[in-house]
Length: 178
Image 1 (cartoon, one colour):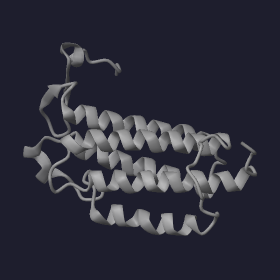
Image 2 (cartoon, rainbow, N blue to C red):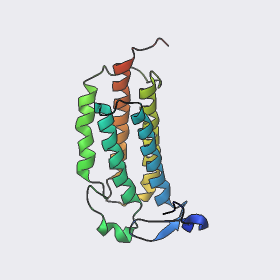
Image 3 (cartoon, rainbow, N blue to C red):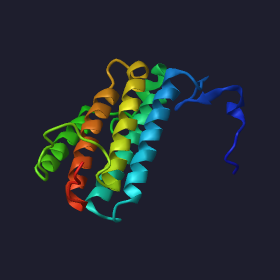
Image 4 (cartoon, rainbow, N blue to C red):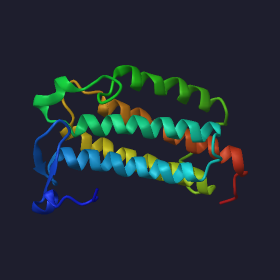
């Protein structure tokens, strides 16, 4: 099997469950931004210990992002074919992020001023992931269906990544004098 198909040489891309759109259509712009965010989380994960709490959490989030990409890559007329939690983001997926945020915020003292990213490599990478998620959220605003949970999920995920970055700052390095 060859990785290239040449089908996109005309500037179009295939959608989940069929159909083609231009690559600059809001749908590929949105799921492409989610793909970028997923890759950023992968870079952060590469800095964690395999099987660690953070590694396990990041893998879970990366898999959730597959669900978002599937939903965003589906034409409106095929939305009925989506499977909740597998190819369709659910309210439960959004809600499931909140207890994680709540738990992690108990593990560090909250910052009292704006955060300057870069206290350590891992927290900085999580902040890069957070900014990629925010970009994906902006792109998803125009691509997601009105009843979709994609935008709330991305919004909550960016909150979680901010929290994870602050948690990791406390895990590995004391605060540096600025």
